[in-house]
Length: 100
Image (cartoon, rainbow, N blue to C red; front, side):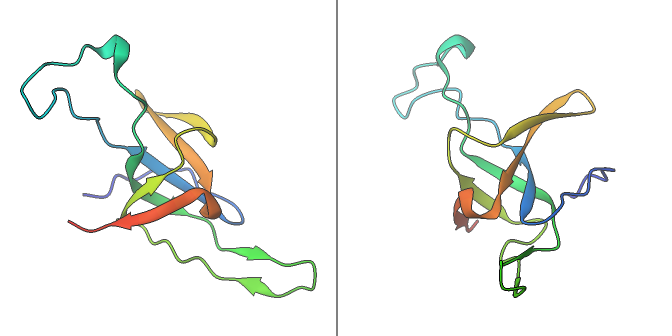
């Protein structure tokens, strides 16, 4: 399941491998690549160690490697991992953990 990567996020950053968006609608209509929305669900591949407040208090990471998460559609930074485009977002840009 987990792909080894040499990318180690710093601070409260999370490396996400976007999961493919559904290629057809519930009624069976196939969606062409040109109009597919940017995926918002992905697999957490690496997490940073956490952040530090201005007062020096540590903010722990809630997100863990291997979780499926929903993240903000816009924002983050796309990075090339092998031949794939992955995304690095801040932990605060992750909206939910997706079960199943």
